[in-house]
Length: 437
Ligand code: EPZ
View 1 (cartoon, rainbow, N blue to C red):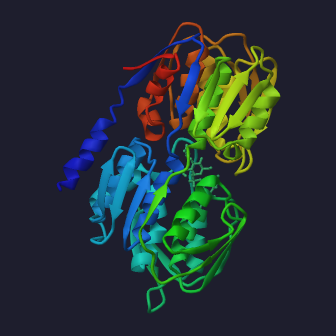
View 2: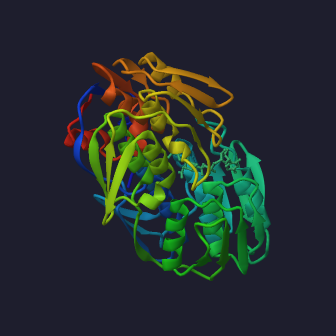
View 3: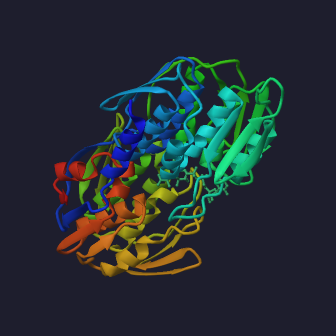
């Protein structure tokens, strides 16, 4: 396969001219099918590097980040067959990737850096581009690096690459006890994957507790790993010699589900989501109940029933189970339309308030000081031409457009397509006037 052209084709598909055209003021009604979780599917794909067998992943969302991760694995000689929401991954012909192509793909996708753990566990050495920062923050990797050093890895840095090598003569990682300085989803996932094939026991203290980490541990255990405690802040991993293939279904995307709940609240509409695991969304559901929304839940189906008048409430983002940073922007869009004043404090990323300027352009009354936004609710937002700067900010502007007076043009569709499967189509199905142009 001519990978280079294939990869350029991906980047060409990201037309930066696509936008959403939204007519606001429509009530939404009906059921939304929630896709598989982006932030689980991507790391499960990276974990497939550890397997000597075949991995069948089900409920994989068809989004551009998954396409890029697929191309990244293909440059490593991994065989991938995709059929709708199923990926069949076989690593028997895996190689160390050609560097230039790998560089472009890694630069397009931060989660590609999480491959360093599986590659080191499998080959004892790795050369991976340093992930850059992005619009929401510097995105450091010190927790990944410092923890892998504890497992016996040495690092060099050359021309924007991280060059890593396992020091012991058997080229095998050695289990150790690790205390993370901060709760990092990515670092916890990198170490889970690396420690699965290490010699001996690894203990992760102050581990992140997100549902996506539990999903990764469940798949690794199906492959033959011996992991206990995922979902708590202390995880133990007994290393094994090798990992086999397995079939695995990705959990529903809690951030997509939260985005749709907020769209229902901002349009004061009653909708249902399926499948949806409310335990993955407790922080959001609690805040929406305080605003004046009611919920009904049965058999993986969650229904939201908002009052016509909703009250402003305060939130502070934080690692799971606290309020998710990925729903901060869509939640702010809702608070721009509720009765009262809301304080929104972002504690996870240092630069995740770009949506404020665009929401104010739509008539919102938001001021920001020291990563705390003060949102004075207004009766109605006004349709405007706005531009999203990242995945979740663009989603926030889209749901603001659903409730605004008149027409809203939301530019930055390439951000949305990274993480939401069929975003506009799903909203059309429940009555929104939203077109991809
Ligand atoms: C994951 O990113 C998600 N991405 C992000 O989702 C999500 O916002 C984030 O976790 C927090 O929940 C994927 O899973 C692919 P972190 P990750 O390491 O792992 C600091 C989206 O919109 N930190 O948990 O990169 C870091 O600066 C994306 O879907 C270090 O200091 O996030 C941040 O303040 C955006 N050193 C905090 O930890 C490190 O080595 C949380 O980052 C690593 C992180």
